[in-house]
Image (cartoon, rainbow, N blue to C red; front, side, top):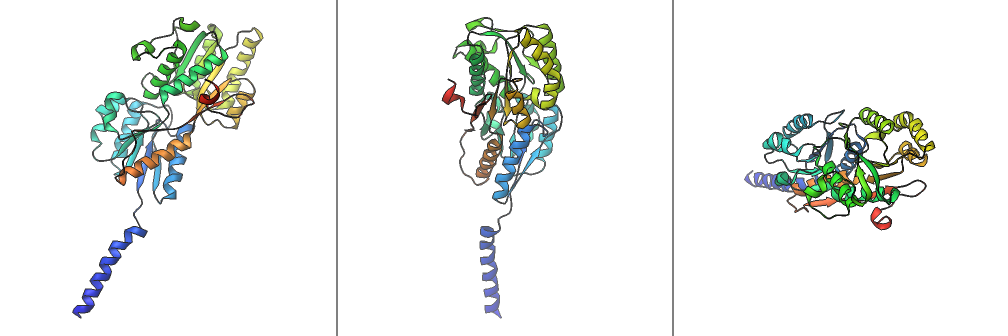
Length: 338
């Protein structure tokens, strides 16, 4: 009887030791987006979920719908931290606000950022970043502006808010490229006032609070009242619904074209869909600069996964960007546009 008990105990111990190798508990991660109904975050969420599913884990897309706001994101982040997730990837709206509020409750939950990083003074709170080099991405937008207006011109920039760190960096990179400077933050923060022939309109940047109707109203007002040579959108807000962009702006752009006063339009966007590409082919938009959204999601999963395994991760994992021009395959701007 004693021998039988020893054998049972040994068998049980072996079973416990071997079970995790074949039946490890799934890990649960999340991307916390600025808004969950934006094409970029939907694609990033799909990439994260696919990569997690392949390893028996899960990756959720969390956040609020509708126009993004830092207070809404703060609330969503507080709720996410209560879920005891194995890792959270956060796309930051207002770095200082989050650092002073929800991130005070971070505890031991591994946190990385994706798409939009924390500000320099708050980056000690996260363990890595996945996404674009947004300063370089802004310079690439500047190179596209120079492609269409090689001698400069009157510029208007479209943005969501003045708080998003990724959009601040893109704007700084755009101005840096057009200014022809490698200057510091203070120099690159100011409006272009004739440097290399570039003049920013005083009413710009136009901030739309992540709302397509708002940005289309702003564009209509701008095109009806102010001569402008090039419009650069730091995000894809004007073309969230391509048919609405076409309906509201196509007649106005055609009228300006007839008078020789039509501006070039350059838009930063996730991978454009067929309807958005049609805007390009029909000449309503002159160029897109896109990011690899699904890859950002996949790489975010892998960074969080490695952190749970105690594996060191790089401070930043950067993804590629691609230029879309009419009747041309997408390509890297660093290969052909510089």
